[in-house]
Length: 289
Length: 175
Image (cartoon, rainbow over all chains, first blue to last red; front, side, top):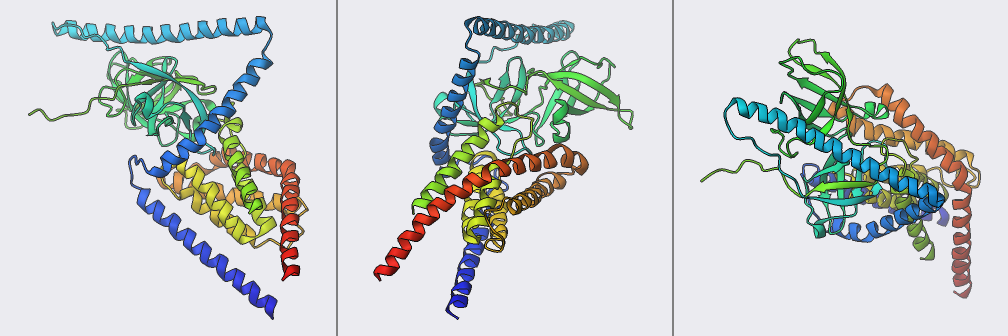
């Protein structure tokens, strides 16, 4: 008798508990479902408490990795390789800028106007300290935040290509959503002709390392395999002219007006360790007085 | 009290491992769901209430860092913890077979929840691709983790339980 009463007592208690927690969860979901970016105190606390650990674990991991490849020769080659890679990325970025500058120049020359230089953005380097725990989304956390002048919506590059955008910042950490994330969608354009398209991440294509593009209005029929796609000037959050990737496949849509296909991202998503954050936000419309 | 602290530390360590070591190689690769394993195992060993709390905390940690909607993961984790709790004391909890089945089933439920609310509602209909590329590999990895680590977790839990039981019994005797 006593035991059964105790059993029901426990059941009731845990059931009440369940209901309270479910209500808390639902309230949180409702309260935060439509938020763009909120900076609650909880985030700050969690960020300050957890990121140092993740940072530490990664540093240990890095140290172990370095130790594993400890032979001086190998290390030397590694650094040299890294330097060369960095150089390649730098040159690719430069080349990309030059192609654009050239196209821009040609257009502006046609208009008998002065050419416009692409501004050099100020960048800050950050390293990746942790990644999304699940397999459904593709976001990661970097070790710089408000303290280093980062803000939500700043663009993030890895090497020569665009890698994502900051969606959340704390004092010393920021969350980056990558462009291959299923929820990501960017307005892009063909570097040479400025024809726009929509570039969106798609989880079902992640394994092949590609992302989708669609609604490309290719008026001059110049888009083929290998054509560079950059962020467009009409994008609200992405700065103009950042390299997204190169066209891998392209096909005409059934409406015969637009084209769609796949891109190979310029950034290497397999090993993201160091990223560059552009400390500049896209200028959005401001009403002139 | 001591048990709670230890469980919390384990949860903490699992979360950090999950977001660092297990994701080191690649952003695109599939990794096991350590927090689900922890929630399900503890719920199976300890019952509904424990599953509820551990699940809620695991989900909340994920939400705080990686989710755009707070409470989204917390809700499913706490429901899984609570549901698994029903199997507590019904089966022998030192046997690894039952946890494996529970982990596989709950991981599938969890994946379906994410798929339906995060993907299907946005018009991503290719369920077959998600099933073969993400859901099944994740379940296999998580089951593997369960195979390897369940015994260890069981022993840790048992050791903590024994001490707790002793303390409680000695109190009763004094009464």
